[in-house]
Image (cartoon, rainbow, N blue to C red; front, side):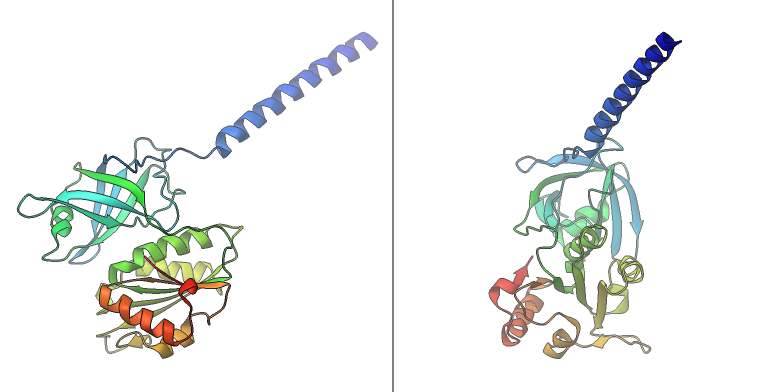
Length: 277
């Protein structure tokens, strides 16, 4: 009887040890960061698997990665270079920021506003499901580490919302990151507001941590946001005050970026407190 108990204990010990090794191996496998699909030196082709028109000149493009578990491998706040052909067949390369993160496995998405005379806009307008997009990256100067600032203020205009949305999502969806995000987003009309549903979803899901103030140059009759151009008063009201532990991010059309830089300088934000995508 003692012999049987001894053998049983021995077998149980082996089983526990094997299980522990298996769990450890699985943990290491799952926790090991997947290698990204981007190449900083060479263009790689990704297949368009879905194209959804969001408005008359805005569409969301979903591109498949090599496998359902693949990640793009784009650091937070950085962008990719996309290559295509314009209306006369000449090659054009333009930077874009995906609205997806590496937590979105198997694909990446671009929300593109297509301008009538835009050279790369022509390429995206002509793309059909099954076509391929040539992409290279990552690109960009922005570096982010969890908790590097207490709060971000963001000044975005038009399609300049895409890097802001990407950074905000990464911060808010990280349970270890307590950074607050304050966004002022300017457009001409209500229809021009990109990813509004997603932004409003972040406001709802992260109350007190994410705030957005919309500004329109030509607002509808019923409107409770800002009107006209982004002013110094709007910045003072809706963005964090100058401090060593905050940073203001800017991304918009060149005239807006220039005006916002002047506003920030006048309000006492140092160059170290500002970053332009």
